[in-house]
Length: 313
Image (cartoon, rainbow, N blue to C red; front, top):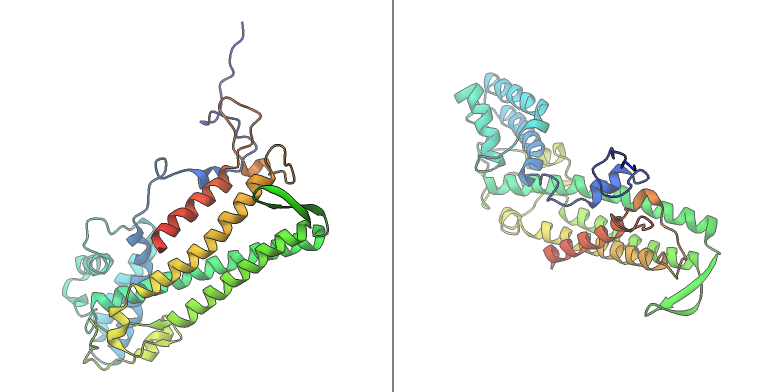
């Protein structure tokens, strides 16, 4: 009698050759816990509070005892950042203040003298976007480097050139890959332009009309990693959507290019075309057709591009 061998994995297909990262990338929020995005802002709020409390001490708005309580409380929170959540609090600002007050009570009550939630959220959002954009730019550069290396090794190989999913003229592998390089180089320029435009610190703009406190906004900006402070306080907080929208547009352009590249790879690796062969490590299988190599990772890239386009436009 035939006895089915007990499978060790939970997939209804043979995933032994597929990378775990590929499976996780292709999984939706229905099988993963969606993060609270405001939790991402906690480390940046802590950093802002550390820098600003030092300025308050310099200008003698708080004394050494108050500063030490703020510093120690923030350091304790920083140590536990990965386990913290703003769930149940109004926002990330009130979360940090409440956590400090629970332990140090009135000693930390002057932490946000001269600040508003308006300039704080503008500042920490820019800090988050700057850091995430830096990561994205590095990964983009790595991808461009990989493409250029492939062009150097195999670029002269002759392949069909397609229009309308029909063979049009003879072409080369290098021409196809270099077309990807050119568009991604423009994306890099978009990223650089974004950073040039928004590498200014809004902290100290308060609710839009500045603060009467004698604080050195330029020094604060430099300590937070910005090139300078914003020139106009009202502009800084009344256009708090602008940097986000601008970045969303740049990322949408990037992902649209990735979507096009993904579609090319899907089509050119399909049965009957066979110009490319997709690696098993980045493909998934079928529960009923064991011969299938489904390009799920590429298809998910296309789906993610559509989501970002919806946000950006």
